[in-house]
Image 1 (cartoon, rainbow, N blue to C red):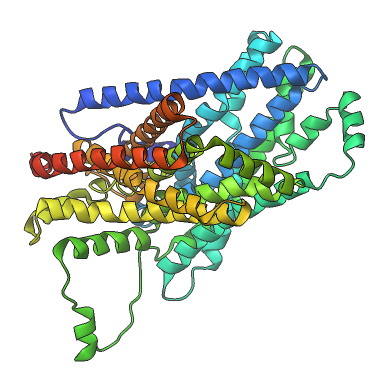
Image 2 (image 1 turned 90 degrees about the vertical axis):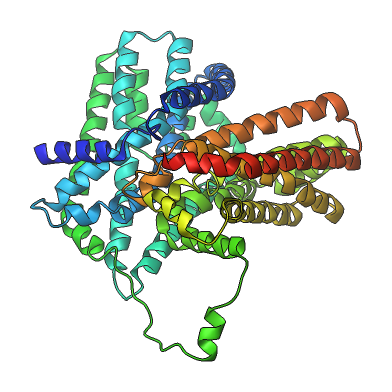
Length: 554
């Protein structure tokens, strides 16, 4: 156990604090944290009001415990989905694995330390999702001190079981796909399959909920006070029901019994994880950094095809694009989130029986709102662009090799344009995917979709340029693994906050000025305003960018 704690401290120390960037930039870190807190306040306050109203509605029918069950189940599922990506990168793709394998350490000790590191970062997700729920429920129910003590303990324990399940799933897959010469490709496919399995599971649950035909019987069960909503809410993770009962009965001895039962169940899951890790981990991680290439003699016409003449910035952009797709940590953390976001939007539609009526209502609302509906879509495109962290980590991803850029026959402006293009392309592809899905589900005119696509382009460019500006001023070049460069980095989060703020201001201004305006007038206004902002930021990059990049070395 001592080795596990020691390895955990070493991993955390090597990773450094999330906000660490470079020496002498402490004030920037403080401003960043303040901006994050301020940006999250509206979301937290609105979430608290929503939870309070939901509690009042459930309390009227004696089903307030379902709120806790739903919250714990959703938090567990979110940690499970994120855990699949995080386990892949921390357990397998991190470069420190190669340093730990030769040491006289058991697999369970390496796994235990990596599990604790992953768990610590999952607590950040849980703090945002579960923290407000526990506080609102405690205040509305008039709970005592014991409730809050149980809440703190359960806060520490709840993420363990879903993270264990994600770890077991990944270890099994990696163990039995560790064959063939193209191991990187197998592991990349493994990450995509893991995310696909999580999305498929969510789709299955949504369909099961939407297939309940006996609504009158369900209503009778709800009114009977038989905790039917709690049973439905905890179907995703049945163990969360023990945590709910522990909180609801915190004032009684039974609550302590449920709490101990939940902790014992979690302990059994950890023992299973360590037992399986001893037998699966080393076999799956051996040769994780190896790759194979085809032995092919290149000459004549083949060499001429490979050695094409391209402009410097386009060649650099292709290099960045290939690195994003060929590095699993970059692909899973920088590119997939923006692609998966439209899927999460569409999944609930599949599980609704009255999908036709909902689609008709949505189509009518979009057509009736005029320019405001375009502004709302534009705000969504800004958020999708913010979720794509390719630009917000463009400088950081180079690490110490960033200084080699000075030896390339390319100007700094061309270098920045080359780094900007992959993020813009990926954001635009995600928005195009969302529009195609909207055209499939909703009865929307092609003209409206084309206008949305054209208007979204300057907004996408703006968010990506802002992401690069953030990364220029706060790069994290001293990383030891690709995972640390993109996952343990607050620059993408700051870019998301900027995107949310810009989206909110845009919708409010359109609502106040041209909510009843025509679609074309709002489209022209958005395109001109954001194209002008793009031009201004481009001029800033041209004049100030080279100097900022020079200061990075100093």
